[in-house]
Image (tube, rainbow, N blue to C red):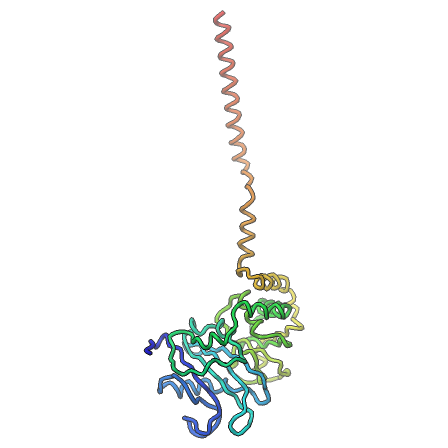
Length: 308
């Protein structure tokens, strides 16, 4: 299959290997549909993000933008060939309008797409769609963590982003459901994100990072705005009424701006009162008709008198 360079979607696999193309053993790129010339470059670009930190047993997804491409990572904790903690990461690299933030949110971290390296693809791979949730499933998940979704939307509305973005503490709420609600309410794109990070002191993390890691005085952490969804800030609490309206609208399936349209419709549905000048003009016309009729009657009476 021939795919034009600007439209191609490549699939990559990172895992532990005894012999890597870059030399030695370790976690690295072992399979991909990339052209040979691009393998080393993308391996170096992504190797710092594909690993699940030691001791982390939860799968996660990560959405990045690099150069003019979007990257979706699905990271799965595994045991390597020596029975040590390791990571197996599947990655898609493609145009931003194909590998979108919505696609990244929909992908289930725990369901691995079918192993298929027949790419590059000309569109989003069917095997990845099959491993994803639709809007109905994500909305149902968002309903289960509605209060956390409201806190997140309020925080994103009111809190100024840190130099490197936001550090979000979800307190058990599903990050994918929270992201879905935020996208529905605020529509801010593109957002880069990680649904789970247990090591938050590294550089180059995405814009929105969900974590339950302990607080740290690292300079990398200090450069981010912290959003605690259980204990929102004063500024975020002020935005809760508006955030509640937006979240409930999204959960009910209403378009993001419908509340504005409805307000306009109500305002224009009522019969408008005519302006004073129009009323005056209308009354003047009636007066003129009345005076004309009176004049006609008077003229007839005068003719009758003259005939006598």
